[in-house]
Image 1 (cartoon, rainbow, N blue to C red):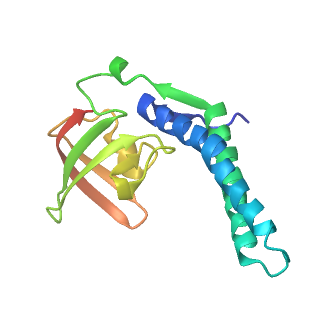
Image 2 (cartoon, rainbow, N blue to C red):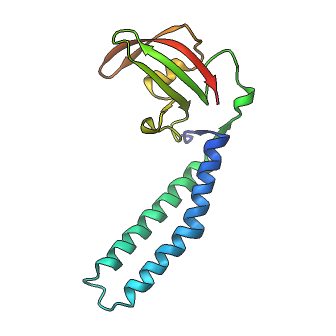
Image 3 (cartoon, rainbow, N blue to C red):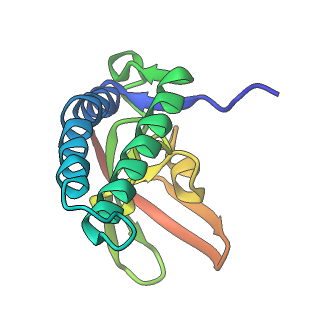
Length: 159
């Protein structure tokens, strides 16, 4: 079975490549220095600084491995080649919950880049999947795990 493609914008690709470079060049060096200093303090069996530095090293290596895996199976979306009349990757979408009247604004991205706390939702989420291909003024119905929601797309823009 083929692995799932990791869909990224050029901006998201650059961000991951920069993070990977920082982890490999700077963070590895910093944690190696912390481990060296902690080792020089003697008994490692009760050395909290050594344990913390080794934990940090494990986290850095895990993140490097995760980014490498993402980049090996990446598909970069050229936002300039997408239909300008409909919502697609990279669009910032402003929409309203038809029941509550609450308004939301999110950037639509691939699952690798999405972070709802930073205002970005995945194309694979129930609402993200419905937004792709939609237009301003359109009402979409989203079946979510906790119920059915109707949203009116107020407008969208490309960033």
